[in-house]
Image 1 (tube, helix red, strand yellow):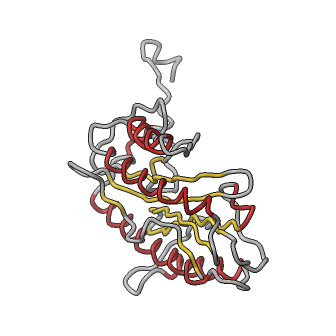
Image 2 (image 1 turned 180 degrees about the vertical axis):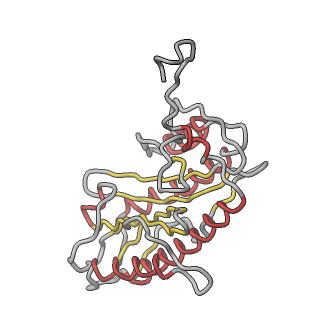
Length: 252
């Protein structure tokens, strides 16, 4: 083609389709809201299943079943593998369960996502069995409030880096630093590989863009996670697809 079109300028359009996916159609948003309902059901299953002496793999099996079962109105598609790291293993992202049994004082970081016609809706929460460590009880409300600040900044016309900066300012003033990005475009597939909520990303938010705001904090031997998928609204604060409380869950 280049030989026969010597006066043409060829441009790499590899990521073009993914960028077009960034703004969702009304039907795509329906699928993502349905995936959000499935995510909530699966996360509630995780919260209800994690208890002393329960095997981690049994809780994971219940969560996976909930992701696939969906609701009476609509079922779930093939979900991404849920991550459910417990105890010291919660110090890193994307780690799975083991066959060990839950012990008092252990925290489990859960990241899962309902899937509806290939449209994903991520969701993360941390669950503690028994008395939580003071590090978790101190960090959790900072992250929750910081998420509120970041979501309030995620309005049409704002840039990705401005949303991240709002979160970083709030949390750093309170002694919590997240060095990695706080979110990314999500939809048809878990990550669209385009816009990220991070320093330097000047992508302008447009109505009906959807992002997974994933606030993961990982330290030497512990961690904490909380996330929401949101839609940039026509004006004002965004729509979030989960109805679960943004908090540290404690199972006595």
